[in-house]
Length: 116
Image (cartoon, rainbow, N blue to C red; front, side, top):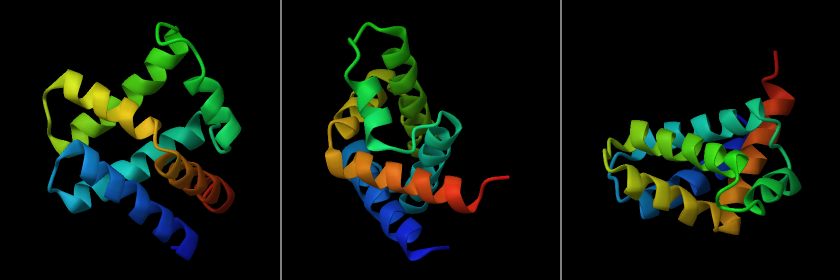
């Protein structure tokens, strides 16, 4: 694993831990990796591509689908069944530039190094 990928995963999983209020550190590490793989699958390997989605209206279907994917992953890995909590956690995290930067950097490294 590259140091860049490791360091960015550490940052992303820390913010997940801080905001999801979940003590499953390894699961949150996997959650950060899964979200980064989702970013790769959607071609979100730059800050501008993520910001383009975040700049959409809250009622835009693309924005809703994007946040839903992240909230679902938070639900799966944290075990929290409260869908509103997971949604608001995803939105809070997406508002943190450091978290988004870490995920985009992870996605970029994954796309460059682990592409099929």
